[in-house]
Amino acid sequence: MHQLYIPSSTMMKFHFLYKPMAIALLTTFLMSKPCVAGEPVKVFILAGQSNTVGHARAHTIATLFASEAPRDRELLNMVFGNDSGLSLVTLEKQLEQGKMIDELTGGISNEKIENMEEGPNRKALEAKVGKLKEAHEAYKQKVSDACKISDRVFISSTADRNKRSGKLSIGYGADQKKIGPEYGFGLSIAKKIDGPILLIKTSWGGKSLHYNFRPPSAGSYELNEKEKSGDKTEEIAKNAGLNYRMMNESIHEVLANIGEYHPEYDPEAGYEISGFVWFQGYNDQFSDKFRDNYKDNMIKFIGDIRDEYDVPKMPFIIGVLGTGATAEKVAENPVSLAQRAAAEAMGTENKVASVESYTQYSHYSNAVFQKGWRAHYHEWDTVGSDRPYHYLGSGAFFLRLGDAFADKMEELME
Image (cartoon, rainbow, N blue to C red):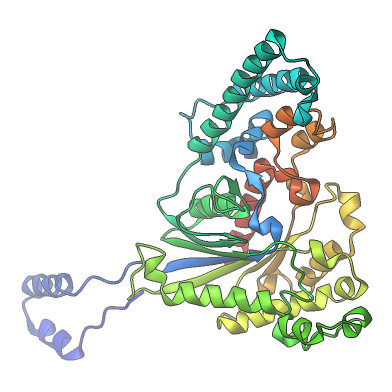
């Protein structure tokens, strides 16, 4: 905010003028000053591995219609509004049609049709199934088309090979029909703060914190015995921390050209890095050294990021790995425990907090998955789109998670 400066000599002249005239002149003086700059762009960074990339097809957001929770109702209104034509009735109808397709075909294998002899009966069944599949795809497209496009929130996203920028919408996940946590986070944070918002997302699947995102202050990566005995020791050592460096290169490139990424950017007002969301951890589960060092690596990562962008109290959220889906399973995971411990060690007074992802799980989608997704493929395809390690590719889950990140971010920003 720019403060208005009035020279003391000017004020002395006002003092000797007749009071009404002085007020009129002062008003004219104030009104003639240039307008102050607009609000700074608030920048939020999201980073991590495949579950930050996002493998949920957008039509699976409609799974939330099966929930009576008030918060899920608010999320549905946030994404679809009241004129989408979607409801619990349309969801249940599609599940029934998906079930019918699978009963007629045998599921993803299509074995019931494949095992039929050529002839009029097979052709008639293929025609019937074809119409049902067309309706199934039309439903999915209808849901995707109904999803909101933001006019306030813009995004620059690297999600594996899907690199895009523009208004926040679906399509910034692993492909242009998918979402990660960015969609729910962006729409939700826009309800909580004023001014233009820019998200910068950098994410690559299958990466660890101990090696790929290794922060500089963690020191050199120590090769294990197998790596030492191979013929790629130099390459392995060189690529330690590669995704950490790629992440920062991408972020700096956007910040250096921020006017290209948000149309409301005002150079006089500038920008503020308002927070960082980290959602990762799966690939650190499979090595003692990776697991045992996760807490220290996470704390060093936060410190290095804050130094990199010169924001000592940058609000920082750690999404706790929750692919186990239940509190008991997550509590058995050393990486999840290390993420919680890192957040607790730094504390909310230091603007660091964790958010549990298992609490956002779509158990509704999981119930269909557990029926056997191959035999119930089209029923499953209505409510999920990936495996358990990607939280079933549930749009309901990722929308909830993004909203939970935004809630916690608002707390830390205060």
